[in-house]
Length: 126
Image 1 (cartoon, rainbow, N blue to C red):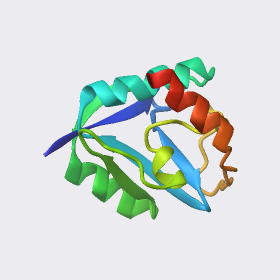
Image 2 (cartoon, rainbow, N blue to C red; image 1 turned 30 degrees about the horizontal axis):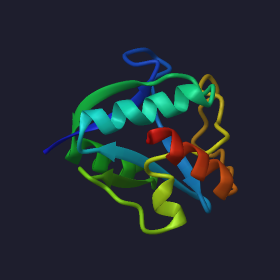
Image 3 (tube, rainbow, N blue to C red; image 1 turned 135 degrees about the vertical axis):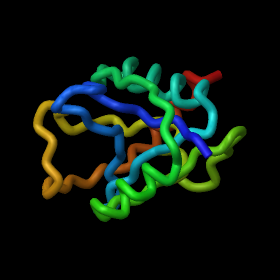
């Protein structure tokens, strides 16, 4: 099965994959639908995040990548409806980001969940 992921600096030495930090865990997002991945990119751009590219990749490759780095991966399925605050981060990016030029596997930062920001981002989808 192929999924869509968000890559920064695609096909360069500084290539990186978009992930979110949640309670000390690094989570790589995988999208079943390209439109959902592109929508997420639009939300990132609206928040002045660096703009990633949407790339198609085999889900097993992403799972292996995540397992090797002790990351988690989450699939955002077609017609995904969030049920928790954490689920909402799968369709609406957090308000802060790490610098994409300074990747560090050992670097760990926690995101504070800002419900008002999530609500605003969800309203932008309508």
